Image (tube, rainbow, N blue to C red; front, side, top):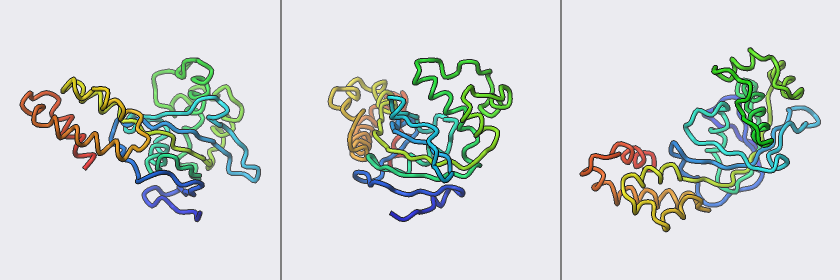
Length: 222
């Protein structure tokens, strides 16, 4: 397929390698996104830096939760479930990749991803320690450069949103609604979640309990 630019994000190119299923999902704040990824250097050999499949587990992020690699959230929310896409990202978007990669590698090894870090921003940790402990990541840190990310969107889960609904009404967490947590068609799951919100909106207003949360969910899904 032809290469296209993500117009809202200068310095990013997207190429769809395999189409996904259904319409583009909704991604309200708190949505859990599960995906596989490969990171490659932008060189002739397209050297592989990281591969989540080789690590034995997919990666996951929560939308709107200040993930260090902000551009990843933008890339993933441009995808459909099942889609495989290649993204070229300019160096302006990849500066924190070494620290993110180090954390993911430690998680894959069963270690604390914050091991050895001080309480400061990711860039502050890079400057403080000068080394991630991985030579290939240190090279990227010393020489900021464009990177290529090949991503496969596996699953979109609305679990955090449903947890809020369970506080409003126990029936919002019933077994039928729990099926939405790992819906294979997230757009359909979002529509069902929207219907659930409407069903309990009047009750929540009367209770004056978590009403603002419910309204925000509805605004995002509209």
